[in-house]
Length: 284
Image 1 (cartoon, rainbow, N blue to C red):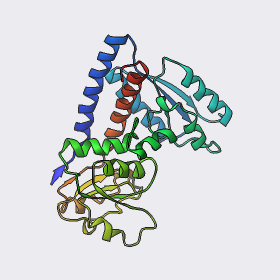
Image 2 (tube, rainbow, N blue to C red):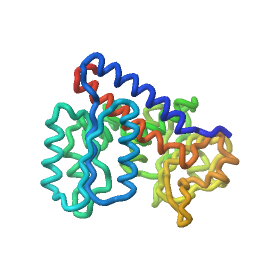
Image 3 (tube, one colour):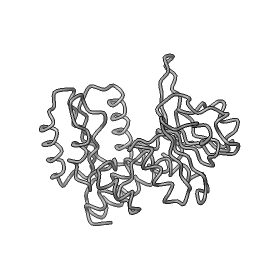
Image 4 (cartoon, helix red, strand yellow):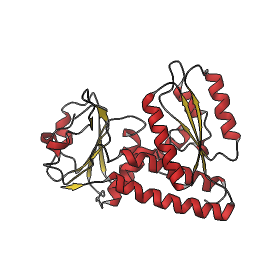
């Protein structure tokens, strides 16, 4: 069984981003800058933003935090996003989700300029992905693909099963796998006989949001398993959507939790930020 080490792959990506930032600064004098917007008092979001800021600093990307514990109205949020859209020194905008109660996430995402949308959630960017000509790819799905590529997964003609249909992970990941010539099945909460689908998978990607929902008897011998889930049990232990102990006995390769897909999300965000800066500065 091969352990798919997301930390190692993330460090490789961050190294490439750091080299790209230095090249951009040498050629243009500009520093790629990411504006992070958090509206609401969410402990997990604050930790995530702190991790992003630390990673950004490590590769030379500037990070500007706009944090509002509570009380920002929809018009005020729109005004903030419009000001960041208009600021030539800001190359990427990250709207940390969820937003506080009463705010329209879809409207806020749509208010971000597509060229500064480094999460890849703007309708235009999602449409480009569906059309097969992506500009910005959502970070977690992109990280899943980066892991598969790094470890040499053969996706052409493979039976790929994606469990979970969110627009953040499941749907974009299915499109990325299709673009690599995999045959893709999407499963979700209304799927009948989930195990019948997962047992067929050469590549099984799980983003269900339920701890240990995939067990060893649901996985084909020799499958590659990408576990996107992060769930904290009452004991405080972090586990994935895959029951690691039983699935590892059957899988050819598997991502751990933590240390699998999680580190890739931040790395791909910074890769997207560098790419956005390059496009806005005329470097393609």
